[in-house]
Length: 77
Image (tube, rainbow, N blue to C red; front, top):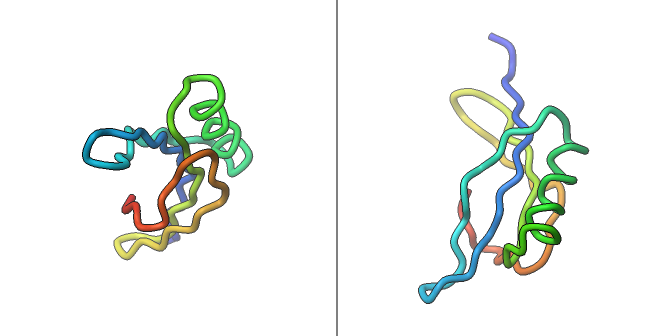
């Protein structure tokens, strides 16, 4: 079976309990994921955003492409 690759942008919001990841948005390319994450942060006013790539199935490896704004290191995707 061939490897499955997804490019994803995730907005990050700050709540009373801390940082919370929003709904993931699938993108067509790494550049699109980076631009979407940048838009989540700059245009839509989220506390931060992250662009990442997930590769593999069923075992998934996640690689962060770019972070914008306030994104904690410990946040699980």
